[in-house]
Length: 330
Picture 1 (tube, rainbow, N blue to C red):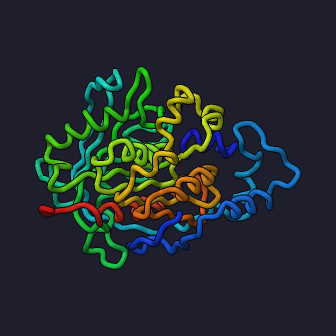
Picture 2 (spheres, rainbow, N blue to C red):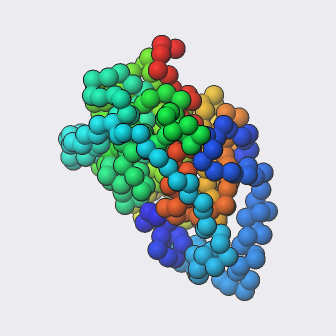
């Protein structure tokens, strides 16, 4: 769980269905704020909202009633592809940033491949962007129905990078969004990854999920697809400020990078979002789902803002992205 989720918990769409590789049996729920109200009413009668806008004991209640229980499927890996880590000085961020690039099984540096840019959550780094496995392992998961094949439609590389805790959008003295667009992606393209003939996809968890959506909204021609797991979407600046003062410098910055109000910029872009019904960011994801374009698929399975939910969602999100990238000329 990232730091914001821990703070929110107090402890430590419309959209159609999408093809699933069989990692989970998920029910696509009709987006309904009344459902959110019912969940809250059931557990918090006569209990006041407290600091950071979350009810005390929510995580305990969720644990007791099984709301956070997620069935994490067993996975198998093909022999891993290579993985390298390094650093570069980011003019956009004004500091050295670390990164990791992983290749799928059977490929190596120098091979031309599609590229997935994976954005980490709050408090994370390029080393922790993927939960419970390395980037190379995520790319090497095999099809649950056929272990001789990878769980992706096409082979692709994946890169992670240090983005700080500023929610992946520009700040006066730190611009992780520009770093990704103008520095990280060109670095990868010099290595043959993410070229026009293969394409780029964006993926992220929590703060990184929000970041993937925001990046696509403000650079609509950058990616061919987006996958966001439990995106940390705020609906009010005051709410964001009370939980994470580093998220937005001021109310104007919040308005400029509000994922809900800018959702129309995603028109025509395949977007997949999954977020648990007991995730504290659920109201924000519901608000996003209500205004997202028709190419956006939002699913609300059981689950919370926890590592088990993230881990269970990673293979499905990667499979979705792979169906929109190409190993041949378009």
